[in-house]
Image (tube, rainbow, N blue to C red; front, side, top):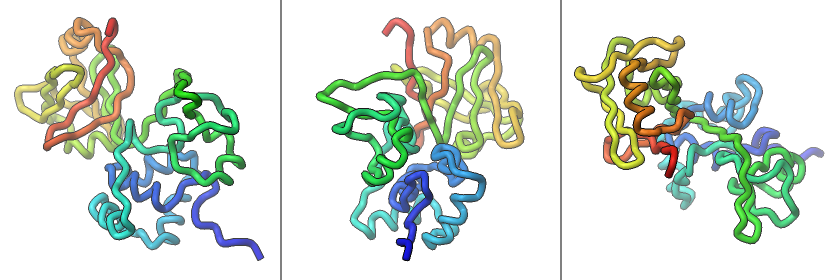
Length: 225
């Protein structure tokens, strides 16, 4: 008799799923980040009896099991969120995500990050799920999760400020007008804004949207630092 599966083949567990939801991820972003087929996550949510899960409910469930929601370095996804290491790694690697050993052996390509003798290996790929803000030559683009978190709608206005290595984002009528990017995402485009960011040597790339004390921001990389 085959043992009952307690999660999808990609290695996602109920605990990791709850941690992701507790930290603001969506089922769609988790499904994409873990490379699951369409609707796979919804089937497991039903099996785990988590239908209608919200960040608040996820935190309560984790507290009931004595677990604290993990604080993601970027956003909780499958291993390799910071894109460090090799595909397989040596036998004594230390994966960043808490996956069962059997899953790791069966899916060596899942492991993109390990720490060996205090050496952290680098590769250029960066996988971010959840709320993401993309900086480009025209300004900002917000994915669906970031758009929802900020409560942005077309014709809203967004102010952008700098505090150290943080770009602070705030809805304000004095800011730059918000435009439609796709059906669920928005963009903020301005030549003056793009020029302002360039002068501050801020690298154009994708950044996870963070929040602290009701303030939304992204931690940016600055050239020359």
